[in-house]
Length: 426
Image (cartoon, rainbow, N blue to C red; front, top):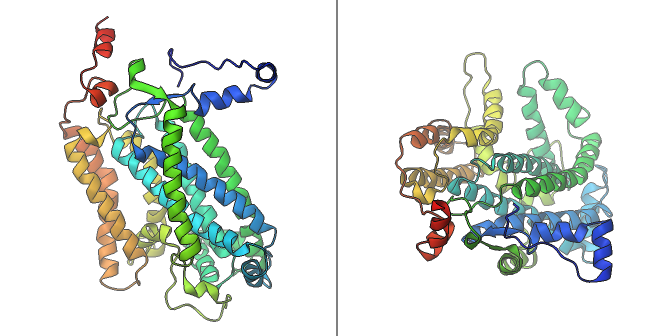
């Protein structure tokens, strides 16, 4: 966002002056993340997760490109090439563990980023496009992660491909042809692995493109903040560099320590042991389960066990699983409250924490066996999940009495903001 008081880029070195005239890349960087980009002075550490998500994407692209140089995209050698990377390639074990745990870190960071948006109303006008692009990024991440999970061609990889692609067969008329088109045949085989390998390599660069659009759209209205009050005066903002660059740097240090603990000391803690067994189409695992970051949506999928009218239970589960994410697209219009931040919305704040607990329950149930009482609890949790977005949020936004908002960001941080008040009166 361009404020009148933001510093302008003025190169002094002759080469930088020439560069600015011919290719103003330094100016672009300065205005995007340097002293020319002003941010609200009160944003807290929850705003650092967006930057961490970008770091995770870079880690995944770099490690993924190197791993692709040694991976064999053929069902006859995929499992062995993965073991070759682990045992024979210099630092291959670190690249593979870094990539696998990097995916888990990416989703953990993104979930924190999304729920911060839920709490502080970051999806509200004028930031709807930022939110919509963020949901697109999340959908692309899920597709990329699923295809990557198939590539090692272990037992869980094969059967995950069998189960997930089998969901498309529930679509009336076009379901079976669509499934065969995705697989390249009637069951996961060499054509499936080749397609998933190609798409898994391509989609991260598509994600990178959407991330650029996401950041670009962010710079138009500027960053949101914990109060939800828009920027009014120069005292409400500080330059992104050096203040928040240093803040992000500290967060990156903490993140890398936690990430390094998983990569070096417990690399398989988040994986499934069955994936270290070569894929066997003739032997079904006792409990087919996706990676932990899919568990809430997997629980929603499995919660539908009965047919309803002309709808098959399998189709209902598929529709509900996708609807659980697609409903986020409509959140800017479902929540009609003029107040953004849950800090000043006492009733909404209570329901937000109920939603957090509900999603955590769904996450646990997604990794549990598909038996009672887990199925019943997942049905109740799924029901509440959709009630929250489709019923509770619209009603609460209509009847709630928010707490008084501060006049400005500076007032929320330092007390009475005389400068902003005099500007408003003038």
